[in-house]
Image (cartoon, rainbow, N blue to C red; front, side, top):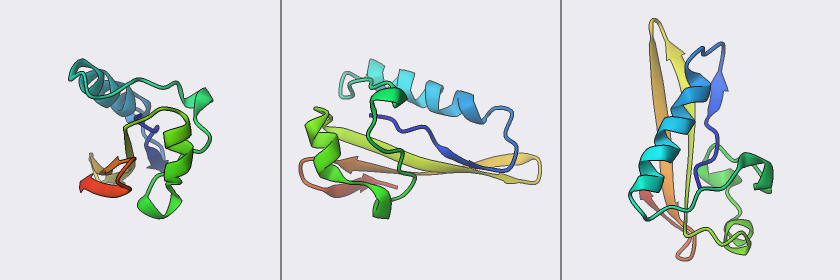
Amino acid sequence: AVVPFAESGSMPAGDKVGSIVQADLTMSGEFRPLEPSKMLSLPSERSEVYFRDWRMLGQRYVLVGQLTRNGDRIQARYELFDVNQEKRILG
């Protein structure tokens, strides 16, 4: 699952980032898309991820992140977790 990225401040492109990432990961065949409305929570960092919830939803991996405006740039920070092993893979 790709959780919508948390945003700080106004980000005109922010809502598109998650959609792009989700499309790319879905095409890899390793990720099952999950509509945000079906997610039990919208974590943006490790301390907010409840692995049992993601297992219950049949998700193998979960990607969380934040977007921050830094001048004229947008910085993305993310973490990818293996739900069954409850450990971070990337980020």
